[in-house]
Length: 99
Image (cartoon, rainbow, N blue to C red):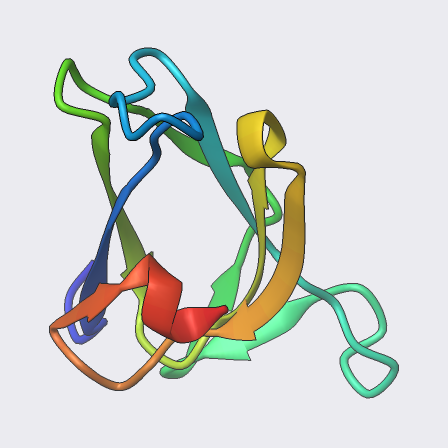
């Protein structure tokens, strides 16, 4: 989309023994607030509530590309994470710094 700036969120999921978790699902959806009544505008564009997702690779890493400034709901079922965050106005971010 022309004009939209994106942040690449990266992270690592592993088991308690430090082994990388292969195939873990990471999902993000737009979060609605009382003010926006079910929708959200980011950088002048209406943003859908479609789920974007990633699956962790063989080394346990994942990457999600999300619009900067968006309010998102981040969910990683394998680690019981459900968290609303604001995507930073940066080109890259590490997920552990956002939670």
